[in-house]
Image (cartoon, rainbow, N blue to C red; front, side, top):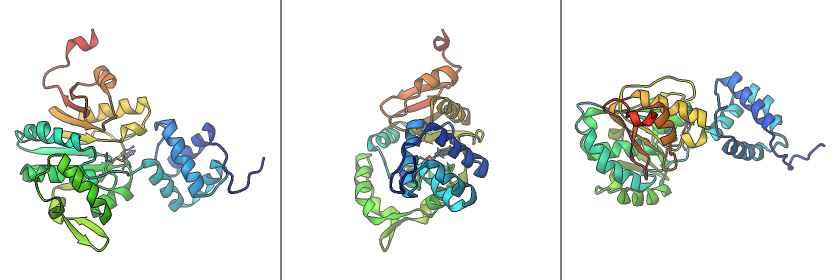
Length: 289
Ligand SMILES: C[S@@+](CC[C@H](N)C(=O)[O-])C[C@H]1O[C@@H](n2cnc3c(N)ncnc32)[C@H](O)[C@@H]1O
């Protein structure tokens, strides 16, 4: 059956497989471990964006046009974020994680999956307010170099400030949130002082290795896009990157206790905010009983 351009055919799994193969072989991005339901949702919206009846119509453009491939990659990897997103999480972080971190002589933070940087500078503000910025480095990573570039630039539409200001106060912020930004027309830009301790590095959680000896790993709203095997790989990677006693913060809906109990030395600290810690001693024996 031949469909008109405006008609879109339901996406078949084989088409998804072919498109993913084109991205992997053409550009080295492996999305095969991403959760099928969310992948199909993203690809359906791309089918409309590029106005193609069949998903397979996109494949030759992906292979021969880097700009098309980049648009597809950007859409699959979803940069959505906010400053102090899930405010209660950051309140818990202020109460539990930050005081513990202050006992370390140096603090390496690995933030995996930074989107456009809203969460990166949330971390920088928290550490600045705890007067820990001179002892810390934030290693901010993402699969997507376009997002990393934007995160480094640190500039967003001004109208978003209202919601972020509210989040900041709900998260226990007592300073002047606006003082961390400069206004440039319709945009707000984070002040350069807050960028001093941040390194922006491309890193793919699907295939790259352990990152650094970290005291705090933050990987929020990334695992939700992965299937269970990939989630397991990533939790192991994060755990192996963490020093004993280091913290791991995941997204609110990213419950990983099954994975953590099987393969890592992670203890749950607060399941409402998905906060874990790498055990200081050996793994508890009851886990494998
Ligand atoms: C929804 S954003 C999360 C942003 C921020 N962590 C937050 O929670 O507000 C998901 C981020 O994960 C990144 N990502 C997706 N797959 C990845 C992978 N395999 N390796 C590293 N980052 C990945 C995306 O590029 C995107 O920037």
